[in-house]
Structures are given as C-alpha cells and as structure tokens.
Image (tube, rainbow, N blue to C red):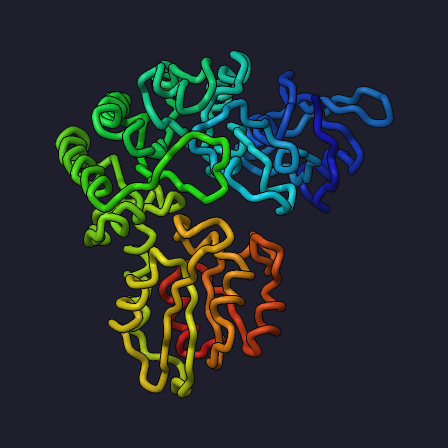
Length: 432
C-alpha cells in the first residue's frame, strides 16, 4: 500500500527535494507508508530517506530538516471515505435503529483506530489483526478512545454480539505497558451492564490508571425503530439516580488513588434523574465533552462570563425563539432567565422528536420536519437552533430538510449556533 502525492507546497522541503504531484510515496526510512498515520509518524525525524515511484520508476531521495518540520505534502488518502468497518452487532447500536430512507452515509458503521487517534472516534478493537494492534504500539497512537461497555469477557461479547469481543482488558493492559493511553466509554443499558457489572468494570479500569485516563458513563439511546432488535428500555429516574450514586462513589475512590475523579456521568443522566449538575470544576479538563459530559456546565460558564462583558452596542428590542431537544429545554430556560437582556423576549421551544421517537430527547437528533411542524405559526424576529441539529459543514438536517427551507416556511431568519454559551448570548443580543 502507498499514498499518492496530490500536491506539493511551493518552496517547502519536499518541493526543494524535487518531489512532485503524482509521485507515489511508498517508504520513509525503509518503512512502508500505509496511510496518514504512518506518514505523520515517520516524517517527524530529522533525517529522512524517501522511497517513491514516478511513472513506474523507483526513486529514492534524502531530506535533512529540523525534527518535526513539515515536508509540505498533501497526500491522497481514503481513510475518511473508506474507514475500517465495524465487526460487531451491538445490542444497543444506534445505526440499527435508524428508519429507512435516510442518506446512505448515516448507515455506515466505522470502527477504525486511525479515526480514533485523529478525530476522537470511539472504537471497540474487535476488528484488528495482531499486526494492526502492533502498529498501534509502534506508532505510539495515543490517546485512543475505547468503547469498553464491560470488562467481564462474557458480558462484553454478548453486548457487542461478537464472540471474539470479550477480553478488552487484556488489550488495555498491553497498551498500558507500551505507554499508550486511552479514554473509555461505557454505554449503559438498564439491568445489563450497570449495577454489579459496572462495579467490576470501573474497578478494572481504575486498575489500569493512569493509562486509562477517564471513563464516561452514557445512557443507551433508543429510538422507536427497534423492530426485531434486543428488548432494551430507557433509564428511569430512580435507575439514573442509582448510576449517579455509583459514579460519585467511584469518583471518591479515584480521587484518593490518583487525584482525578476519573469516572464521569453524561449530563443526560443528571437530566433523567432530575438531579443538579456538578459544578464546573468537577469536570476537570472536560476530556469527555464529546460524550455530553460537562457540556451544560461549560455552556453555563461561557454564558455567565460573556454576560459580565459590556455589549458593544445597544441591544435592539426583539423576539427570539430558541429551539432545542426536550431534555435540555427546562435547563436552557432557566439559564437564559438568569441573564435577562433588556428589550429581548426569549422563548425556548422543546421539540418533541416524532421522527426517531419521543425517547430521543437530545437536540442533535431533532429533524427539520419536526421543527417545521411544531413551530408552525411561530411569530418571532429570529429562530436560533444549535448547530448540532445540522450536518457537519452543511446547513441540512438529518431528514434532508435544509435550513433555508425552514426559514422559508417559517418566514423568519434562522441561525445555527455552535455549542458555546457566549455565542448564544451574542446571538440573543442580535450580534452577527
């Protein structure tokens, strides 16, 4: 396997050495370049022996450079468009719960350690031959993001629907010895991997600390499209409170051992339990923010800090509608009310998810059709929505409805706000 050079930076080290677009990069210092991970790792050295092919001819050249200096190459890689597929059949897989007729990319199940390293995707490590596991160690791929779910071998194999999926603890111990660190995720299913099973999982993971840097506990997400799938149920208030009690108990143990709380429950658990969120400082470095751990606390701090600053201009009287999922609506109402803006009337609308089912309560899975149906007849000067409702880099909802269509049907401007409290405050003020 090799990578084609797409472009060469003018004046860069590669250009000075004579590398050209269309050359195929095969080896660096005698080691094969299989993908971007190999390239990034191998090109750091100060002395490089580059092996490439050009028009069928093998060419070798040398480059001397400061250690870590970039070569100035853009490489053709299909890593993002063709990731390593998942080999599991998880009891709780969200992709299996999607309705038919959505765009094809939503049904792709990736489980690629390279994406874990580069973008923070969570992986199960169940689809890797020994050579790839060794490459993780050789390339010092750290930190990784691991979907653990359970350390009991039989239970993990059952949860992942894969008889070969069980012994992740042995792999983590191997990584720890090699200096590879990792963050862990445990998707909790009531009555399956919580309770005593979670006790064992957290004990095993804390034993692997500090290689295991953190653990996020996330409630299973269930849609109404589960025909033929495992009979799972969402967490009740009392069950969520039990998980939180367990979380806080293990945080105390972890603080005594290593000075970190180590295990964190997703914000959604606090909302289900009707419990007060921990203070901002309790989330430490917010290392599990992508799992919805500490997102609300950080958002609240950002908004509060921004509110202490004088606005650049006078706030214009106006009516603003804010749409979000049902789980965060009450919290958001309280937060906005705590920082009133003179002349600005704000109404928060909780959008019930009819597309995936009412058990789906997060804002990121609200569709354009649900938004239009439930906000029909809305009278406001502007609609604000979280950017998580839209595809990455494209103003389109999961169901294919565009943001432009929403604006047209509602007859008002609609703006997507990144998950940042300060940005919301500025938008409420009418700042562009």
